[in-house]
Image (cartoon, rainbow, N blue to C red):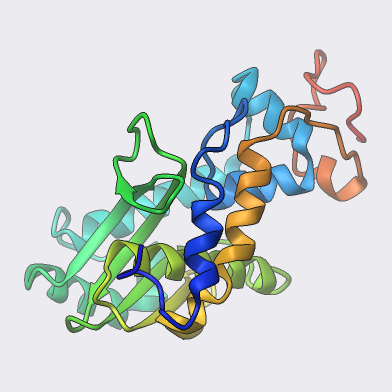
Length: 251
């Protein structure tokens, strides 16, 4: 761990050391989206992750998946023409495509980390955290850019997307110990706008203990109480339909 965290922040190392022998619960691994769901309604996590009921995310999510696939295929030279869905970032995607040809871009990276933040496989037995990137641009041995493609609205999502970008930054610094600076970029494909943030290693790692604590709370949980509200239930399919999986859903 010493080469991944700043010597000025010994608490980063001790935070991990005190949790290495934890007994994990019913949901032993987390991701940004899973953590976000757990913190808004733990019972929704129980239905999807423990009871393993497939959630219906609706047509907006299906569209997002399709556009992400189109972006990956274009950047990786698997299709010749830029799809219409990416036209508002025409210059940026052409640049990504060129950098990919120069072996400077990773796409759809699926990173797994153990409880002590050591890299492991995406589906390895010791996987505790999962971080998936749309694109990682290696600018030099010490600097890089993380790019995340966003469909849908930007307004109202800034805080959540900033938290997501921070998790990307923390994961990238653990994955690449020589990195010193990282720029995170959210590309809002429907609007032609971006949200960017630059982190040094020390700046990102300041937030790691709190993130680690939140993730430990989720992955050691044995109880999953419902948290019904108009907002939470609006975006959850488990309380809808003729035979809902959640009896607390607010329609």
